[in-house]
Each structure stands twice: as structure tokens, then as C-alpha cells.
Image (cartoon, rainbow, N blue to C red; front, side, top):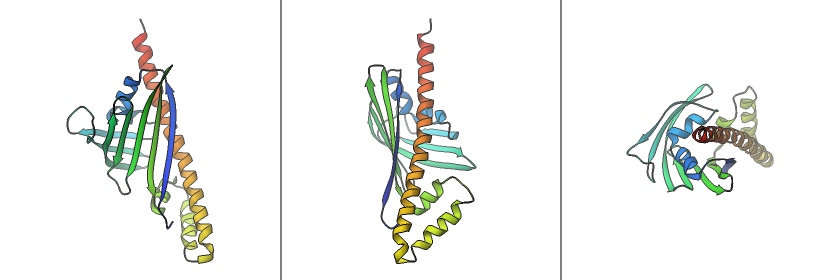
Length: 192
């Protein structure tokens, strides 16, 4: 991969709950992260004072598969109860943009994530299999032969698309978890 590419994926879900209730969960990563079925949260902390606002920093530590991941993210834009955007303090950084839109049955929650793709990041995002290393080695060999470089770029593009589809599916399951949590809470609040 010689040029800079961006991996962008998103998911959307409609939730039968008030936008303010949904926003309260998705803007506070201490409440949102445990609803992600793709990870096991070890710790999420807000560094600094309440409430969450532009400039707030969260510390994340969680299990994903066999790995423990930790990083910080900063809220770079917050327009309650409609928009929260954060940027990770990682290399390369990733941006998460969450919008809450009012609809007749409650609200529509959309999350979009974006990261600059490097060959190393793309390989790290692939699920661990015995096929990944030979694949990575083959793609890297294409760079040595000028006539084969276009094929290497096509293969990386295919790999990028495959990773984006998988991550979008994982993101969709997270948003489905948020919906289930909020709709259950709404039903319990309405119960006589």
C-alpha cells in the first residue's frame, strides 16, 4: 500500500426511546462500552470532571479475542443530544462519529468509524488464521515486481473491503446491544 487509504464503516439502528436517553448512553463510554458483545471490558474511565464534554478524555482497557487493548480517546465534538465525535490517541488515530436523529418511533442511532489504513493495521485487523501470514507475505512480494504491483494493490483493496464488512457487522451487533438495553429500560420504566 503506497498511498494513504481510509477504512470507513458504519451501522445504524432505530431505537424506541427518547433521543436524550440514547444520547446519555452513547456519549458516556463507561455506559456504552459494556454493551459491546465483541469485547470484554476491563476498565473504562473518564479522566477529569463530569459531565462528558468537548475535551473529555476516556481511558479504555479491554479484552478482544486473546489480546488486551488499551488506549485513550478524546471527545472532539459534542452537540447534545444529537452528535458526539471522538478521536483516539493511537497511531494511526481513529475517529468515531455518533449521531442521534429523532424519528416518529423514537430515534435513529448511527455510528461511523474511520481510520487511516496501513498494511500493518490491515493485517492486524484480519482475524488470526494460518492463511493470513502467507497472504501478507504474497502481497508484500508484489511490491518487488513493478508489473505485479497493480495486482498487489487490488488484493489490498479486496482485503480492506473484507475487513470493513466484518467491522461493520461487529458494529451493527454493538448498536443492536445498545438498542436492546435501552428498549428494555424504557419498557421497565413504563411498567405499572
